Length: 179
Image 1: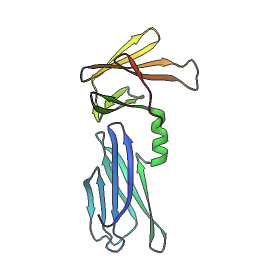
Image 2: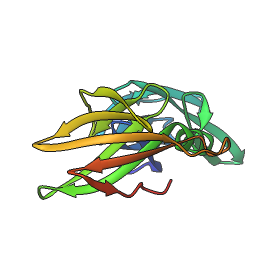
Image 3: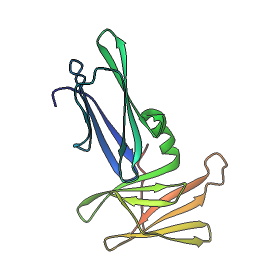
C-alpha cells in the first residue's frame, strides 16, 4: 500500500469497519479496501478526480469516496455513507441507535440497538429477540451465550428526550457508550 491517501473508521450496527483508499496520482490507480479486503481496483485511470462507490457491512450500506482537486496536484478525499457526509451520517446515527460495550466471559461485546426497527446486533450478528410489554414500557429480550439480556424502553416523561433505552445483562445495568 504505497499510495494510501485516506483511512476512515465507520461504525455500523454490525461493527466498526475500516475503509482505506489508495490513489496513485501519477498512474490514476484507485484501490478501495474494506476491513483489509480489496473491494475495488482500477489501474491507469486518466481522470484523476471523480468517485468510487461500494458497499460496507452486513447490511450492504452504500459508501462513496469523492476525489476532488484542491489545487495543482493536491487532492481532497471525502467519504459519504448512505448519501450523507461521514460526519452527518454519524450525527444522525447517534439519534437512531444506542451502543453499549461490555466484557462478558473474557470477550468484548458491542451491542447496538437500531431504534427505528428495534433490531439488536451483537458483535456483527443480528440477534433473535422477543418483545414484551411491561408496566412502564417494553423489554426486548435476547441472550448472549448463557447470559439473559434485555433492553428496557421507558418514557423519559420529557418530549425532547423521548424514550430511554437501558441494556440489562444478568440483572445488571450496562452504561451506554457516549456517541
